[in-house]
Image (tube, rainbow over all chains, first blue to last red; front, side):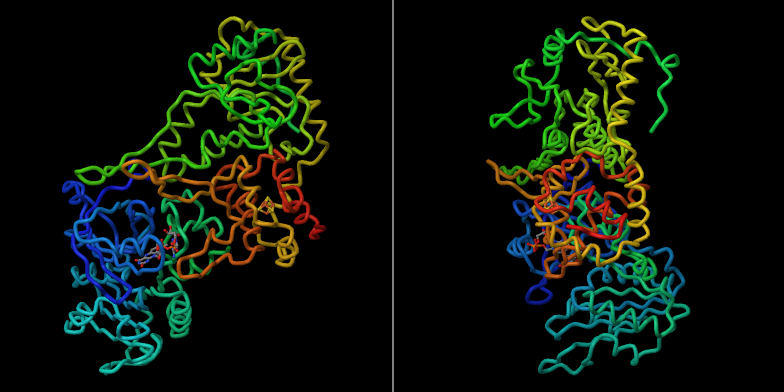
Length: 273
Length: 357
Ligand SMILES: Cc1cc2nc3c(=O)[nH]c(=O)nc-3n(C[C@H](O)[C@H](O)[C@H](O)COP(=O)(O)OP(=O)(O)OC[C@H]3O[C@@H](n4cnc5c(N)ncnc54)[C@H](O)[C@@H]3O)c2cc1C
Ligand code: SF4
């Protein structure tokens, strides 16, 4: 990683609005050779610089199996994210990483996979989902359960349609509150568990979303017979450096940016402040 | 207390003598090759570390500046990346500071603090620019033959005489200093005239002074260990942390004057044609330290932050991770704290299970 804090300059190659406050940015390192050799694992994150506003962590939302662009989906919530949303295609940002451990894709080989996403929690899963779909025959059954507050808050709407149309996976989408024209499921994410068949013994469950959703989903999965080691999530903490030096993301003596952000639920239970 | 060193077995070449009247000329010679930083009385009379302009102003008497010399390896605002905008787009480059420097007259606690910071920056993902800067700094310590009033370095194995983190250690023998070269760089610094070989008698005297200094502290060295056991096994009652929390005012002073605290935030500072990305000191005692953009704050309550500070400093988990306790016993937090949640007070409370405020 050379100089620990030195970002590389990247350009915004394209942008797509996902919801009124969430946008996906496709980035390309300015140096082509560096771009081609850039590698990461789904579940890892990058430190994105908006020059003049500092850096913030965002997970890779794209799959390493599609190295053309590096994508990240960002919700507008504060100084840096607001500034990022004012940038245009071709503008320059900084990219530092990859940071963190990422999902262990090898360990998922041959397993059934259950993805449970809530709201803005789908982006880290999206990278893993495309990774798995691009190597489809190496994995067992694939189920994707996704929920958001309203239909407007669903991200990757086109991709949800693409996934729904595929015969080699099961996709269930729900919203907390419907809007006019919505004919799909209404209810919190855990209500989807009764609408499908879960196979706890052979399945790895990947759960990402707001803390409250993770709490209920994980409780439910454990009750339905999933082992703690088979329930995998990503943790979020205030971060400044992403490389285990600034101390903001420490829980006990673990650092979310180094030991995580991906943990299984047994590990999460053992993290004590 | 550790056994007296075996005078016979020690490398005689490592111990040198400097008569005090030659001190100024030695400092002047060091200034030829490096920026020399030493304690001196500042404008208001307070002792402060700063670059030496007049070698005669260097203070080697009792007392240690309230600000440790950490600012010279980890400045309060530390530029790390230059971001320049020009016609062709943005250019980024690392900023490093590799000036040759000597920190002169540092005490053993602070030398231990610098060694701790270095180890921290070198482990896991090493911060090379930090290491390059730190490694260009030679450290000349002054042994504490008279312990300071608030220090408890013996409890932390960090004094009163230095055992690591220094290149040269000076021991005040009255009209002369014994100068011990601890590293190759240090031995070279004391190799030539006006230094001359120390006698066996000087070395014996030095050891006597060390034992006398240690005796001044009494038999206190078990305290941190007992607190460590309780903190590491999380056997400190929540009510105890709760009881302490009105006694911290969240000023961050304890962190900023601590020789081992290094938490930071990163900010872009506006410059001509761009920005300088800076790391700036931060404090784990501030509520915003863990505040996320969503408004969620995992350490919302003050007691959680006090607990965090002491877990990082004295838990066995961090002891294993960092190879040392995060306290060097300098006593500065006792001096600074607006309330009373300083290291000795909290350690005593943990040990006794009661908080007296
Ligand atoms: C591992 C990880 C992955 C993330 N992935 C995504 C993602 O894919 N999409 C997305 O929209 N958001 C993601 N976040 C959250 C995102 O980092 C914050 O929303 C962002 O930092 C807010 O920055 P701001 O300057 O706009 O907010 P402000 O409130 O102005 O924050 C100022 C600074 O505080 C820090 N900070 C504030 N909140 C957080 C936070 N929740 N996590 C970490 N640092 C924070 C940042 O350094 C930020 O620049 C992720 C966070 C982590 C830790
Ligand atoms: S110095 Fe004292 S009052 Fe200030 S933050 Fe530290 S513990 Fe709290």
